[in-house]
Image 1 (tube, helix red, strand yellow):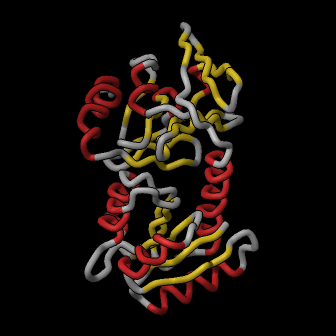
Image 2: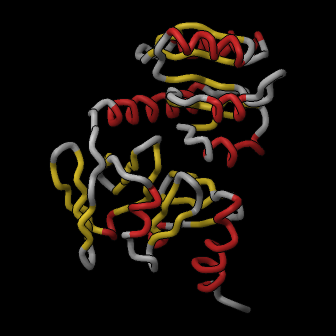
Length: 240
């Protein structure tokens, strides 16, 4: 998987590149101190993934990500954890806080590789869903896949696709996240951000910034927070 690093701190670029050298499936094609130089590079060179700092002079990472039309997969790398929610609104694969730990980096890279493989399957036509009382048929990769609602942990929007995460598998389909949300049972599924729908039956815990399902921390978007907590948390809260 070919990647680039964009960070205005020389030590941060070098440190990340050194860590990535230990991951055999990653090729660092180049690294840049600012987003404008990276933008010129992306006009002529195709990459699969970019590690993108947020706080940079001239053009910050979030604004740069917004400006890209056909952007590669993105992993944000920054010293500022408060940008986590904003980064997921950009359909980022992951969000790493400096200093980056090797085990956390490897988890993010593995996730990016998995998603890239799904996207490379080449689902060109919009897919459809057939909804029944307790399950749904999703058209994926020229097959109809039966998925019971109770098995769905969460659904993630990624570019023009959604990824349905169950206990045992991931199912990719070329469908808008808004479209699939409209066809799911309202009592079980909540849209918690631009990129995520969660099955509320699988929520272990929640706070004002995230919900936790198994070992996944899923961010709650600002625009969705009040309605989610009012309907799915406060309404079911045991009062003293």
